Image (tube, rainbow, N blue to C red):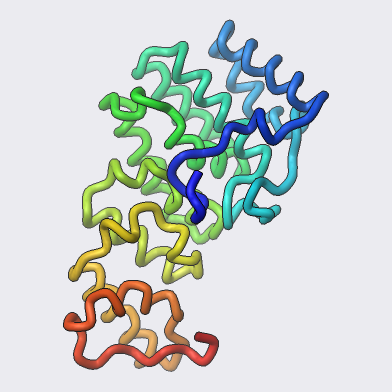
Amino acid sequence: MNANGHDDLPDVAVLLEEPALAALNELRAEVAGRPKRVAVLFPAAARRVVRGPGPSGDPTGTEGPTLEDLVRADLLRVLSEVLPPGDLAREIEGLYEYGDADERRAVLRGLCGLGATSRAPEVAAVSRRLLADAMRTNDTRLVAAAAASGAQDLLDDHSWRQTVLKCLFVGVPLRLVAGLAGRADAELARMCADFARERERAGRAVPADVHLVLERFPTVSTNPAPRSPEA
């Protein structure tokens, strides 16, 4: 896991002490032996293993995965090792569709931990659908989890840029967006400049984060939006 909380997830086992570690190992074995049980075990993971802030220290799961997110993501990893891609895709989609907000956040966090299976067409397609669904919400925890996921590299450039704009709209820090350093381009800067001008015309504060993109492409706008007072 990098400093920004996205891409690879930490091994939750190293963060746990007994008896939580023993409980995790029991769930792993159950999922490996009876994959269909994941529909019951996934929701119960927080109660049976652990809950609370993860390495980011954020109990809401916005800045980074919570401990229960990591446990659930680990179960998805186990699932990816025992199911063929088509079955895996259906299970992941079901866990997201029927899950509550916390379970959905964990699915989004776990998409990057599926190993080589994440590139299988069926799994990649489901990942894109779930990332898109999260971007249609105004739940900052879901938006942040989707934006920070290494699965963002499955998106085309247009869809990825829309992720960045969504984060600006709802207030998710752009430093959490996977791929920002490598994928930001002049088109994204133009979109950010337009966003900033619209906010200014409406008399609304321009998020300071917009300048993380604009300052990298100073020629995109000859009239960059002013920084907000908070910047």
